[in-house]
Image 1 (cartoon, rainbow, N blue to C red):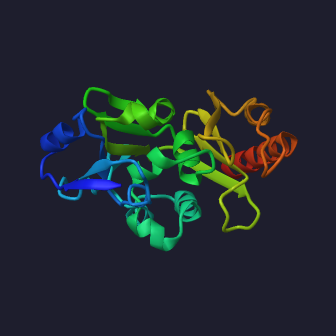
Image 2: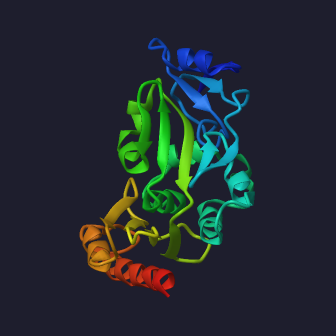
Length: 251
């Protein structure tokens, strides 16, 4: 239940509003989460006047302002076709028009294709005040109440890593029962992230090369059983999809 609406035009004022302890105040970007029915009294801080919707290439990184919509990212000529496929798997066209990159990551659960891909890519999140730059792997566990009074201002994606992604679901349009993202750098460094289960996506492997990645993916889902699939099934599929992704990258 939204009690009051604020629209500051500076980052300083925004942080002051969010820092208030006497009232729950949350940032508003695309509104796909905040605007859902809720009995919790809150005030919202609209971020649209802060200029946080820019997409900028800087060196080997793509810098995304927190309010960049998923569709704006999908339309960017800077992203590779695999990441476009991931974004399209994350949400329908209409939702992509409103959903922001920061809001999507904050609200994501273990079935998020985008969070899976960005975790594999070792993406970074800028969190204010005080926290500074965090890896997405460090950021995901501190969501929820731990984000009260804080604001994500930027997400960065490395452009010097290749990305492969594969998923299995009930239908091609459904969120995955298992999805695998594999990122590989020119040095050979390889990261494997898994989605399709639980409250958050999992980093299954991060090594100087791909040796052991398939076994690690299988082991990461050893307890991943729920109403959608058994742990044994997810283990088999995670191993198979990891092998497929590695095959795409290594030719």
